[in-house]
Amino acid sequence: MAFEMSLHLTDVTVERAGRPVVGGVSLTAAPGDIVLLRGGNGSGKTSILRAVAELASYEGQVVFKRGVQPLDPAFIRSFETHYVSPEGGLNPRLTVRETAGFEAAMEGRDPAEALEMLALDRAAELRVAELSTGQRRRLSFLRLLLGPRALWLLDEPFSGLDTEGRAVVLALIENQRERGGIVLLALHEEVIISGARTLRVEAAA
Amino acid sequence: MRRKALLIRELRLRARQGGWAVSCGVFLATGLMAPLALGGEPALLREAAPGALWLLLGLSMFLGLEGLFEDDLRGGVFERLILSPLALSEVMLIKLGAAWAFLAGPLLVAVPVLLLAYGAAPIGALAFLLASPGLVLTSGVVSALASGQRRGGPLLVFCALPLIVPALVFGPQAGEAGLLPFLILAAHSLVAVAVCPFLAAAAIRLQLT
Image 1 (cartoon, rainbow over the protein chains, first blue to last red):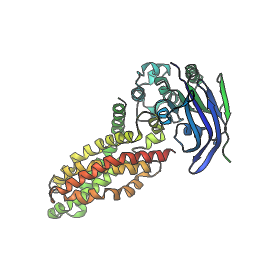
Image 2 (spheres, rainbow over the protein chains, first blue to last red):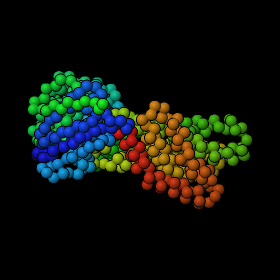
Image 3 (tube, each protein chain N blue to C red):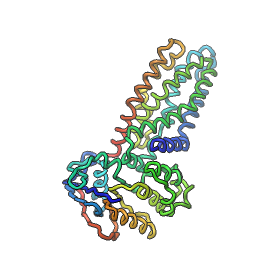
């Protein structure tokens, strides 16, 4: 299976509480592209990811296309977009197994193999609140393994992870690239990802 | 499949969060203390029972609803749910439905017990059953609006109390004015089911953007 979707941002300005956070971002990502959004704290990297997922209000254009054909953005956001926030979309009161079961039902897959890949199978009965930071991060990547989607928006995916965890995430990204998916990463640390482009992001004046 | 998984998740969370124990406990405790303040006159208690108990019911439901959305909002779960095939209003209906089951269940046992203890007719429990979806859904909307705030609990009580006026007015009349109070309470609940999931979804979107 290969994805054929491309992503086009034209002059996107993201607003928060009526004030522009980051202004005038333009970006084109073809199938198989990995784009690193770099910038210091408060430069608006996260805001751009959230705008692409329509979790933030923005001005400008975010267009999804297959070839030259524009795609329905509502469909892309419901079926073809994964967003992994630093919080990870986890509820502290659920166990790892319950969280995995829920994610699996949302994506229609069996979670056992994915849990093993993320080295979480032995922590399955622990509550999310009892996990270490790194384990929690790993668990938040579970849905990337369960549901193949064309666009990944990863917000600081490497923070809190050990070398092994970083390797797992890098392997996931490489896998997504091979099947023609797009990965947008917001990063503040130096991580080398082969074949990735870098876009400098600066806060709006 | 997705809806069922979400419903199971919500029921688990509601059971663990313990809002049902708070609301039922507050209702029983305040309901049992009220006669001490009112004086032990049986005729007076019978008269005061419906009014006092309905007010306590409303308040204890608000307290049980506190924190309904906080964990998921802070944990980024709503972002995850928005980027899924489920509509956010559908998600809110399921969430509020699960909250209703856990709040109304224990109270449905507690209400007739207290009504009987006050010497009033237990028919008020039926009125409560009809009114409870409306109570939970309308205060659920306020809870969604307040979920980004610290001290959301008092804010919730303050803002949601006016919204449950129909229940406060017609609830205590159950058993005295024929069928009318029951119909109005049921209508209040039906309107809430139709409108509140959309309002709650809009409130959550507002918190996110």
